[in-house]
Amino acid sequence: MLQEKWNLSKQYGVFTTPVAFLIDENGVIAEDVAVGRDPIVALADRGLAMKASAR
Image 1 (cartoon, rainbow, N blue to C red):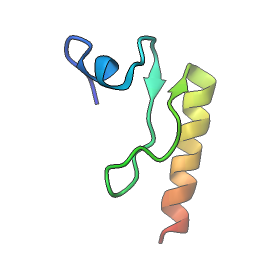
Image 2: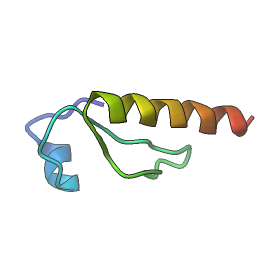
Image 3: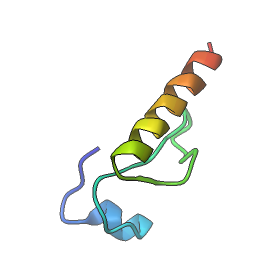
């Protein structure tokens, strides 16, 4: 998701980039925010593992 005029940053209190959130199938944030390249890649890997285990 891309934000417009810092709307999401204001809502979640995160004012740095890049950041990522792992959102579950219910639209709920499943883990703490990941900040920076390596933590974002690790978060994406965990998200893929969660999706695979849900099958």
